[in-house]
Length: 82
Image (cartoon, rainbow, N blue to C red):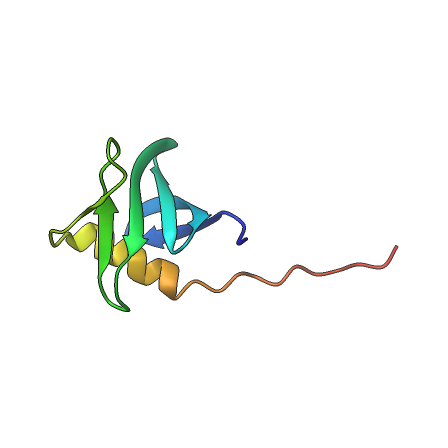
């Protein structure tokens, strides 16, 4: 499973925690903010916290976060021989 990572959209920083099955928990300002799920290559859906079902309505912020996740490439860690 992918490790948690941070993304920035404009002045806002988000922490992304992969949950598996193209589902991610997003933290904003150190607090759990939303859970999102990939629907198609360009559409991301916000999840309802109570039912854990996707909410099928357009949300620009959710799509922007999803696109940043899709384009995220982990930094390669330098391995040092001791």
